[in-house]
Length: 114
Image (cartoon, rainbow, N blue to C red; front, side, top):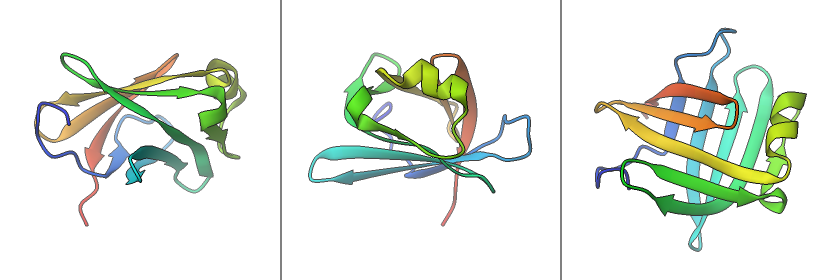
């Protein structure tokens, strides 16, 4: 997906400032993409069903207002910024890191080994 290298399906945030990393899980079902963001000890941050669009150096997950579900861990800022839809951009940083960003937020993630 990103630079034609296999993409891990589970990632953990390393740049959080609250000692509660987000865990991102990516899955597919019948050609649709689902991305779940779980805030450690807080629960669901957001669950997104969307489409993947490849750009020159990244991958975008684009979604509409109907394709995002906010969980109890989502702040009002996140809800406000993404309630009408949006996109998450996933960019590889070296071999073992992934930058995930959206309006007003970004983080660096590492793969979760099984």
